[in-house]
Image (cartoon, rainbow over all chains, first blue to last red; front, side):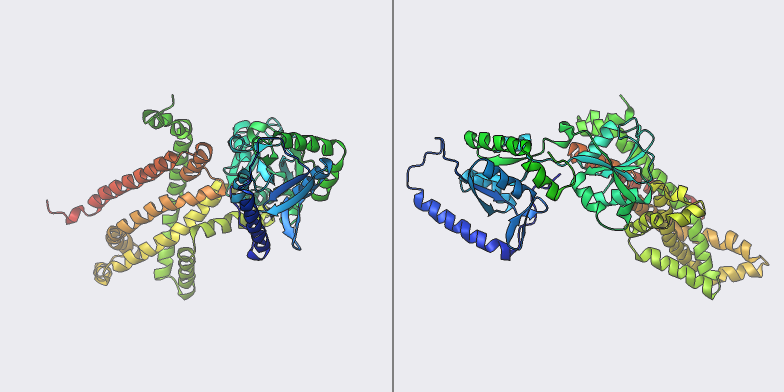
Length: 276
Length: 238
């Protein structure tokens, strides 16, 4: 699960954007006297997108340039929607206020689709999700990840996460569920042989598998079923309520890039597994 | 309805009703963990104290180093050292047949807590034994008693009175410190309360857990009062 606020960017990167936003605010103030008509259909040939730029590998700044999986997805969406897109980096806490003020049109910053968020802003359909996965040791005799197959085994997850809840609800008491203060301790205990499987976020666990000697012990066995009640609906683009035409445009574009293979090509550059 | 759901039901709190049984189960685990560690630790602690007082130069300095290490480092660090350290030397432990024990989080915690409390208790015993006046030894020896008898019949009862209160403190501290066991997957009182909180986001479960810790400590305090009355009965005027 993502925290609600994350560390902001360093000063060196942020400064030009602050200036830019100041300038935008001045321009906006100049035009504020002109009659506004937000309700009528807008021309979406240009879309102003805000992101956080501090959440690799999804959105981050490298060599003074905005990069990441969802940035690439957003660019592909703009191309598909025949729109010119501009990107601006905004602090996590300012994203939704800026959207509501009309300084930006869309938020592409790994916004999780939740009921609470739907009350405040509109969200497009999912453009990615992180699958929950069972990680096991390579020498395991486990063949499947169903509660039946896991009966009598020891499972681990990070305490307080959806993964812990999922295991407790569906796998206990048939299997013993151990809860850890963080994901790495659970993974380490799997490597050490105290537990038989770990359930966690596939992207985080993929990163773990890349490093350290302990990680050579383990591999993924299978994804857990993408149960929406536990693992959520995934991540969508945040829009203003009322910009229905933009939502329709982006929803269609998401479907289109997933249908024509563009999405898969982008995905393969970042993740060795499906995140649709 | 189970008895363990009752407190939550009475005050009308859903979180306590739903997770009451887990929390009471955790209370049982905490008491088990502390009882095992403190009892085993008292035996080990007494042995260390005796070695430190009456052992040779080498053995008494080893005992001193032991108490310095375990009293000078955080309990959580010791627990992680045992828990994850045991995993690192797993092949060795498997060869000597100890891995089956160190595989279990509960064993690791009980093992660490025993070593830890033994160090503290050793210092308590040492101080208590030293507080008994030399004259007591000399008088007993003058009566022709052997050293072993002098220790158990003359010195130990007097040292016991001195050691009682600090030992009670140590027990109380162990009850509270044992909460770190929840960080190695043990669902003790703290662990099961954290579980309940992660599910319910109701702070009442922490309040309830705090009250349970308080209750154990209060019970220990009262038991200690009774024991003290008993040990010092010869000092009371009738």
